[in-house]
Every structure is written in C-alpha cells, then in structure tokens.
Length: 151
Image (cartoon, rainbow, N blue to C red; front, side):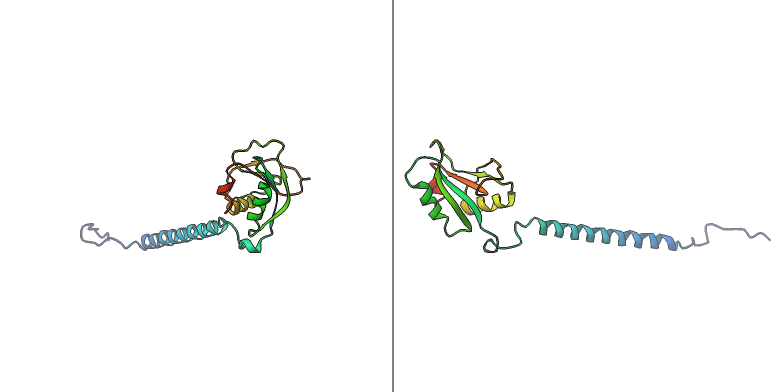
C-alpha cells in the first residue's frame, strides 16, 4: 500500500527550470551588453565635431579689430586668415589699444562656430557680447601676442 521512500537511494529529480533560468540570464546579459555597445556607438557618433569637412561648411563672418595699436595690424591679420574658411566683413581699431592677448568676441550664440573659429585661428580666449544686430558673428580683437596666430 504505502511504499516506503528511501531518500538516500533515489536520484534527485531533474530540475529543467533551472537550466532555462540560466539560459534566460545568459541571453539577458548578452542583450544588455549589445545595448550598451549600441548606445556607446551612437554617443561617439554624436560627439564627432562635424559631419562635414571645413570646406563644406559656410564661412564664418568676422570683424578684425586692432587691439594693440600697431599700424595695419588688423589688415595684416585678415590677410593671414585669407586661406581659411573665414569671411572678414570689416577691419577696424578698438577704442583703446590695451589688449595684450588676442580674444574672440562671440556676437551670436553659436558655440559650434566658436569652436571652428578657435581651431582655425588658434585663439582660445573668448568672451560673449551677444547682439542680434551685429554685422558679423564674431569679432577678433588682435592683441600684442598676434605673432603666434599669424601663421
């Protein structure tokens, strides 16, 4: 009638669900790694500076201002920019020739063009004086350190 169970001689029952659980965990980990890889690729594609080469982008419009009082410095600096993708709108002098360091003045809020201009000129110092009525996107005030940027 009642069979006696001998727990020591009977093999344990096979648990098929534990294998399925391990396979499910492995698949989940592979999918998670794939998702991280795809997100990393998308982020690295977004972080590339420009989708186009500099020659395919529109020229950056600038005013070149002599900030240190040397004769014809704005014109000489503008000539040094002639082979770059920079459109010099006007030349002039600052009201006071007090600039020891050259600086870019951003007139329109465009950080991408600022980065392009910094790369083309080598001038890293910049400030912002936004004006929607200004004739150019940027002013370049040429200081006494002009020789390191006229290459």
